[in-house]
Amino acid sequence: MEEMVTPLQYGDPSHVGPIALQARLRTAQAGLVYLGQAPDGRVVSVAVLSSGAALDAAARDRFVTAIREAERQGRTGVLGWGASLVDRMRGRGAPDTPTVLAMHDGPAPWVAVPYVPNAPGAERFLDPVTVSGTLIGQRHGPDFLHYWQGDATPAVPGPPAPPPPAVATRRSVVLASTLLATLVLVLLVAAWLLLFRGEDEQEPARPLPNTQFVPSPPPEPASPVPQRPTPGPSGSGSESPWPMDLDDGRGPI
Image (tube, rainbow, N blue to C red; front, top):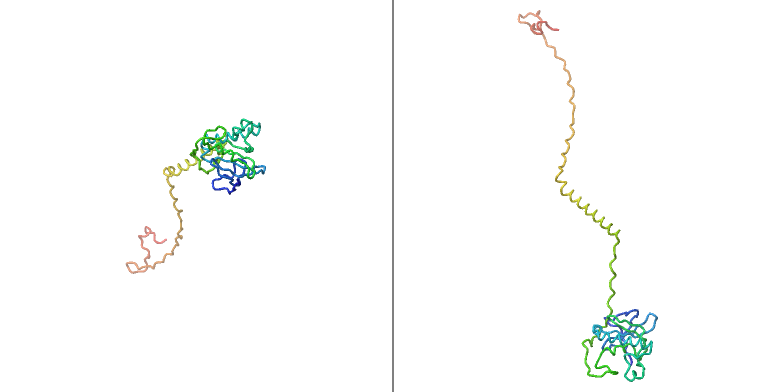
């Protein structure tokens, strides 16, 4: 049957491990098959379990077991998962089991095989995941649906764990503690100066202005005005104009 290649859709991973995914090849009941490119440039077919199948421990174990048996068959020729009862009795493996190039068996397992157009690819490892009956050679028994069938969301591996926080050295811790203590001390001193020192100290009084002395001019002596002699009581002019009682009767000087 010819495969229908479709572009990657929303939710499809761009890489699985070192393999870059380029397109969808098909959607199976247990997962999806992608067309990818290996680091060496080889075109590969990649099978990825769906989210529901990856959460089912039994389904995940069947997928991983089929991959490991295919690897063992490729190395030693031991029969793989897809061998029929006749093949097991004759010692031959299933003729359509592809060669496993890379795989991952974690919580979101996947497998990569060489891509050959119109030939069996990685979807062969998705077939054993859906069990419809007792497995004795070929599958027999009544069909039933797993609770995760119909889920077309690929089980994408989770993001890598964040790196551990950097461990500070003893020197850096001591330096940071010293800087922090210094900063706290400066803040306490500044708060004390603002809150308490202003209440204890009073503002100094303003100095008085300097006294300005303006000298007054010296007194100027005035010449006495001479007095005219006055006549005595007898009316004669022979008596001295100076009364005798002045200067103890000594008269004018």
